[in-house]
Image 1: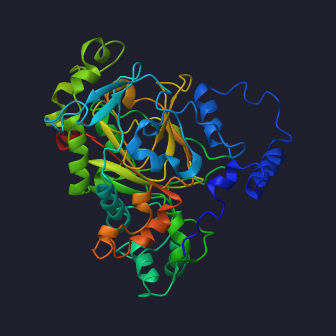
Image 2 (image 1 turned 135 degrees about the horizontal axis):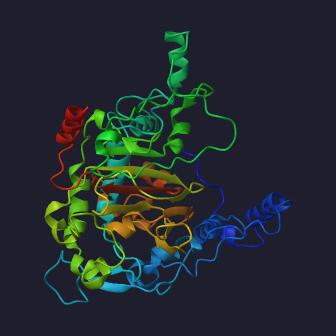
Image 3 (image 1 turned 90 degrees about the horizontal axis):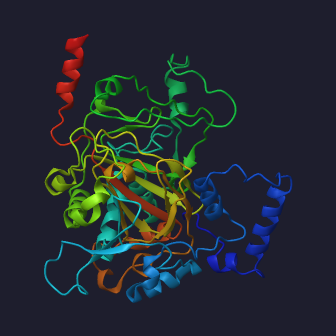
Length: 463
């Protein structure tokens, strides 16, 4: 019942197909009046975004790092969708993970680090197929529901157990595909007179980007007491059937609540929970990385500001504690443009990002958009770690979700789980995932030993 792409990736790459010709017509129409030198002022990061975002012609991924392309065990996965990069497209160094102390180097799990990008660690196929399915279930059924905020809660009145669980009931014939009411409609019935708000009306024109002040222990009290009013619901939305609203799910909050209007955390709402399964994966990733190989020697010191206490990577196996994050639900036409994470007071501790579902092109650059980014093809089960002062403040984004790349182990009910609880309704999940990438990224907001209550009390005493 979820709308899926009628156009196959084979059509997109076939010049004789109707899909290819349609994309070509749209391209020529949209670029007919474009100035010839429109790209002259693009930064290297913007140029890369445009390249991989392009619908016509389909982008060439030969310069995109795709470690699965060199892994025979992932050959079937790589063959899906005709999207393929190269395992040697970027300089990198192999390191052995600590999670398995036995076995030969060939048998132990591996990760990769990047010269010139200290703190960036790529762990291909780190999350097993079984764990991927469990995380996907958790993201849709357990995390995208009350009390965790989603992008839809501002605008629609959702059931307490969440949109996805309501959709499952529809698909199983246990409920009608009822229309979900916009929040503004109910508010208009309860209060005919609009409530006053401190938020000014948005001026006409393109949406303005917010450049938030980087968080730190020194300005925490100021940021924590900055007003963070709730966003108003859209007044123009109409009731939508449950099945039609599911593809509009874009994110679900994890842990500390992130206020999108100010791009800062709203600490007045208290710490949310981090699911045990997610916490275990993230802590396992951080514990398994040999950080002395990542930051040892000059790599961890030259040109990097670790703060007044100096480098702390030596203690991450004991001090790392994930307490915030987000689940992103990307549809195949969605993008995440270049941005920098500035909201965590712990500006160096690892951010762990897990890819599930369809593959994507991930770009990571430097401290400005003028630094050329490395393009990396992330497939389901891959994990990226961004750590240290240079990498945690690096520009990064996702310009392209690659259609037709759902791996076989997520596509349908596996024979070994057909009669199990896992296989009972997986076909519904698999149908949704054919056009979806789920990204779970988790980070640590506070440095180890920082007490937010003490900081706020000191501010009050000084006033």
